[in-house]
Amino acid sequence: MLGRILNLSIFAILIGAVACSKDSNFTGITEEGNSVAYDLWNGESGMARVNINGNSGYWFSVNDEDEESTSLINFPTIEGDSLTSDNIESLVSHCGGLCGTVELGDEAAPSAGVGIALTEKDTTVDISKWDGICVSYESELSMEGVIGYKESAGSSEMPSVNFDKTEKGAVAARCAKWADFKRTFSDSNTGIEASKNAKSIIFKFVGEAKQKGYFNIKGVSSYKHGVANLDSVEAVEPAKDEACLWNGTSSVPSNFAWEDTSGIKGGLWYSYNDRGENGNSLLYWSAEAPSYKNVIEWLTDKDLFEGGLSASVTLDKGNSTRAYAGIGFKMTVKDDVGDTTLATADISDWGGLCVYYMAERNMRIVLAADSLEAENVLEATTVPTEKCFTWSDFSDSGLEKNATDVKFEVSTDENLYNQIKFNIIAVGKYLVDGSCTVNTSKLSSF
Image (cartoon, rainbow, N blue to C red; front, side):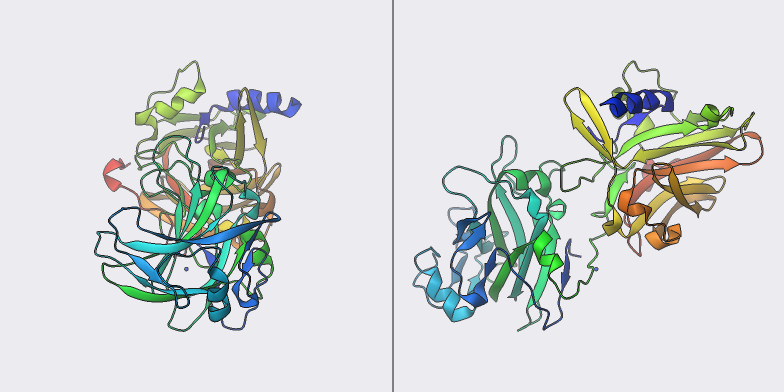
């Protein structure tokens, strides 16, 4: 499970036990002349089949799921609108890729597209090690990348990511990680999970009813291979909120929206103070101090989470060299039945961190890699404020490549016995204009 909060003493026990044992959701390039090495399919070479883990996949055509759909694709060398393994070779030879003109029907949300069958019959294939997918294309319509996968339960909606339309006559090479593939109506079954039980990759063209547009898919590559072989990469930022990792004002604030390509999940919240170093500082939650037998029950405490992680601290250094208390999250957590393993993570591709917060006193924001730390300052503010830091703002420490923790701490070299309030409202990946939108109606002023 994600987003747990642990008291430091319980967290120490857990550590001991374990020790023994700009959008569009993609990164890409648009400059002409950049060569792309395709490990899956290259239309310019006349390839009809797709290289899938050493086996052959094949292209097929798709339209709206509605049986009465009137959307279709006209292919220049094919009679009818059905693309098959028997007629694709002439099309690829003609187009130097896979091309056609999409004619959208008059449905409410019309679409038509082409897809790559990754397996035969009802089997699936694990393509998670690709890390994602790259596609070189031109399109007069917006194009959605969709992972078709074997659904075990629940909604049949497939995770998707948007690839913008291109300038007329221009080819763009763009890439999306599996984590960027999302379901519209659910946080579950993201692209990472779907990639482990994949059946197809679909490129679906969308737009308004009766709209038409030309497209030509030139090549397809795994993310891992494609990005490594691009001449240059232009970072295209995800949309605001899609870069938000945790939002205490959301409907599900306990969920930490991050998972790496190996399926390891992030966001184990915990609290800590100086008492392990002979200090006497204390942290008080805005909700009544939890007295649960199981710390996992913190996840269901609506009063604790709604509106952010709001607390106050008294700072008493006692016999310690300084007084401190705060909260943090362990970067990666792998949950197995009966076992929890903590791990490091390379989060350099986040670009940095954005934090929505309030604090009556300056706070430290700390990036940690085990015992190594780099820090910056969250200035005191009594109104909700979002502040963003690039990794270089953490003194070019490089700790983001092997991160273990991010912490938010109130500290002093003196004793401050009055209670100092703070609230960590939301945390996200770095975007210049901020990554999270908060619901201010759920926030309490100091």
